[in-house]
Image (cartoon, rainbow, N blue to C red; front, side, top):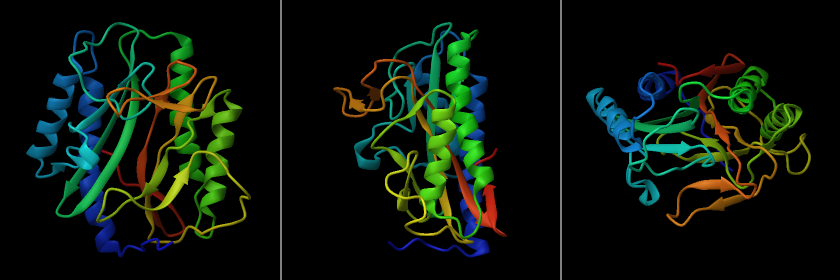
Length: 251
């Protein structure tokens, strides 16, 4: 497994691509309102990305048709934007990728529409808290499997389950690079490759309520859990600098 080590100037190029992702996500957060359609939100984010000189990297990637993965309610990840209009009490996940001068950005958030119930607040908080707990834990020399163990513990301790078969990943000159970073531990934590200064990767906890097995819907993209319950998703791109993780995908 060859995991790239980025030079400081390369990390800055990745930061530039990721800053646009962060700005697009904040734009969507601000416009997540009752009555907004998923296609309208997708178009809004694509316009923002292009206006900042970048390309929406998900559009056409593996055949995905849009700029943003819009994942409402039971859809945990990879939702295709439709004409569905947001309703009071919905939750919606947004996952956005960019490409700027050959370098890629990627991040995701889940937000509520209007007033949401305490159960959904806790579900969203689990994804966000797991993400930031994992980021805070990262140190030069730590193993990626130890990072997966941190993610799993944060999710399970909150009373939820990590979605199986999908994971975080490296990022750089391609949108998905080595390594794969599951949100759960398979095998022993003290095994496998180590995190090193200069590595850049995406951490993205995907949260299920009762069952962790994924189901891909008929459109070939939307992923739900076999439990049929709502899920949540958060993601940042981070770089390991001076022995710890720095978030690149902030607006």
